[in-house]
Length: 291
Image (cartoon, rainbow, N blue to C red; front, side, top):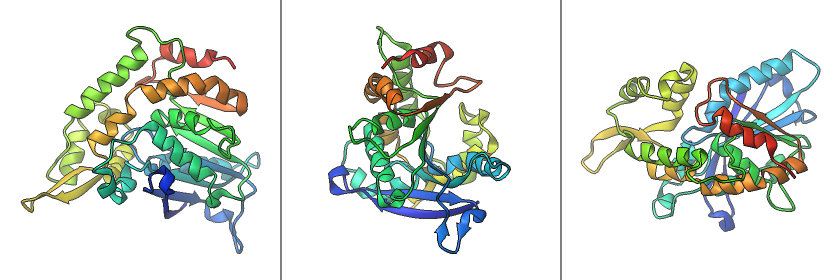
């Protein structure tokens, strides 16, 4: 699997921030004229606190499956760091320091801009793939009448909150609890090894596939120097930025728009065998939206 790194700049109307984007393809899809684009183009969005590289184990499996069949082909895949996550957070560190935290709606605006950009201008079969909080971003991405250049959506562990909203709704309470947990979470270590050792003993990291934890440490942490000149390791995405993705307002708005989205394009949802953020009883509502 070949990976190429890109940086795109959002227009001033969307904040003018820079975003790190990876493109992936199998070497066999390359021709002398470039990338063969008669297959699917997959656009991946990450969940809160993770990064574009977290999709790489999944992508390797998908490319292997595509290579073993003539039923479908993958032209290329793209994975996008939200402007306050991963490498994007480092690119925008100065600009983000004096701004309100970015929200799920900001990620939606980035995704909408990207799929309608020149990078995908000649791509006809574009499928968006979201995970957890970015499933709400994918839903909001399709809101305008001139909605994003998408053929379909795949939503992994969707967290939209469709009506009705109940008093002490567990979907909203879960987000509120996550805000509290994140703000209390440790965010500095002496080294990357120390960080990995600590994370490997904590929930949810200790139940992750080891490859995912390795990616989290490699691409989600970095070394900084404090005012006294001492180095330490911390998250690329500041905790104050992360918590905004757990607040319920954008997920409720996405829930209100879920039915309309399903009326516009094919939508496939995937739920985990081991529920973490999305419980089976809560996900029931997503199967019964009406348009």
